Image 1 (cartoon, rainbow, N blue to C red):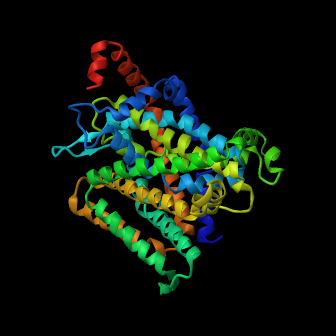
Image 2 (cartoon, rainbow, N blue to C red):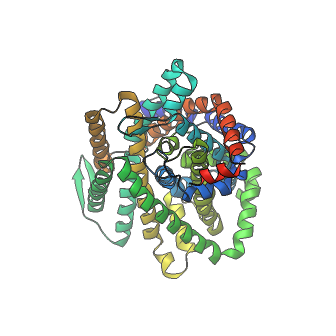
Image 3 (cartoon, rainbow, N blue to C red):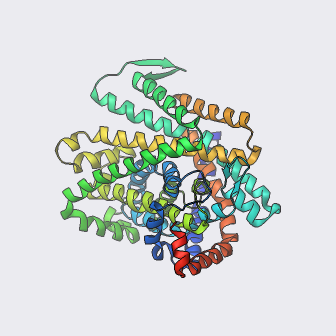
Length: 476
C-alpha cells in the first residue's frame, strides 16, 4: 500500500459513519434540548438578519457576519458536491442531505452563539472568537490542548486544502473547459505539465483579486462578501427556479422519486446504485461538507458581529445552513432529478451543466456551460477569501496578533493560490477532506459539553424578551 492509498484509507475512516453519526446525533441532541429552535425562531432569525443593534461591539454587522460565513460555505459543494452525491446514492441522497441540514441548523446556532459568548476584544478593538476560545474559556484551561488541536487543523484546512489549491483549481479548470468548447486554446509547458493559456490567465487574475481582498484584512473581506454573496446566491437560485417552473409538470414525480429513493433506492435506480445506506452516507456527508454545520468554521465569522446578545447572532448564523443547503443545494438537486441528469453516465460538474443545458429554455440552455462556469467561479472565489479569514483567525489564536507572522501567512496564502492551478489535486483533495473532518471532532466535543450553557442562555434571552422594554431594547 503506497502513501496515496494510506491517505485515502484515513479519509474514508474519518468521513465514514463514526463522524457522520457524531455530527448528526449532535444536531439531533441540540434540536431536542433547544426545543426545535430552528423552526420556532426562524422568523425572528430573518428579522435579526436585517436589523442591527445600536451601540454593540463588533467589526461587522450581523448580516455581514452571515455573508462572510456564507462566502466560505457556498462553494463548489453546492454545484459539484450535490451532483456527486446524487449520482452515487440516487435521488434519495438529496432527502438525507436536507434532513442533515435541518438538524445542522441547531448545531450552527449553538456553535455561533458560543463563539460570541466567549469571544475576546483587545485594546485595539480587534475581535477573536471561534471554537478554540469557547473550548478553552468554556471548558477550562485543562482543555486548551483540544482548542490548540482545532486551531492547527483550521490553519491546515485553509492554507493547504479547502481554501486554496482545491478552489483555484476548480475555477481554472471550469474556465479552461469553457474556452476549449469554443475552440483550440494555446498551451504551454509549465513544471512538466501542458497548461492552457486560459488556465494561466485566469489563475493570475484570480490571484490578484484574492490578494487585493486578503491584504485588506477582515473588514475588506466582509465588504466583498456582503456584495458578492447575495448577488451570486440570488442569481443561481433564479436560474434553478426557471428550470423548475419550465418543467413544473414533472416536479411532483421528481419529489416522489427523492422520497422513495431515500428509503428504497432500488425502486428508482433499478438496483444499479447502492442501498439506502449509500444514499444516507452520500447525502449526509455532502450536506455536512457543504454547509459546514459542526465543523467550527462559521463561528469564527459570527464572533465578529456587532451584537451584545450571543443568542441573537446564533439565530442569524443558523440561517447560513438554511440558505446553503435547504435552499441552494435543494435547488441544485431538484434540477438534477427533474432533468434526469444524474442517471446518464455523467459525474461531477458535468451533471449540473447537463441539467442546466436541458432544463433552461432557448438561449439560456445553450449558454449553460458558461452560466455554470460563472456561478462556479463566484462560489469558489468567495470560498477562498472566506477561508483566508478562518485560517488566519486560527493562526492568531496560536501565535497572537503578531503582525509580521500574520502578514507572512497572508502572502503564503496568496502564493498557494498562484501555484494552485499547476498542482495535481488527487492527494490535496483527500488531505483537505481529512483536515476538515478533524476540525469537527474537537468542535463537537466543545459544543456538546457546553450545551447546558447554550440552553440556559437561550431560555434567559427569550424570557427577557417577554417584557416590552426588553423587546424594544433588543431592536435598537
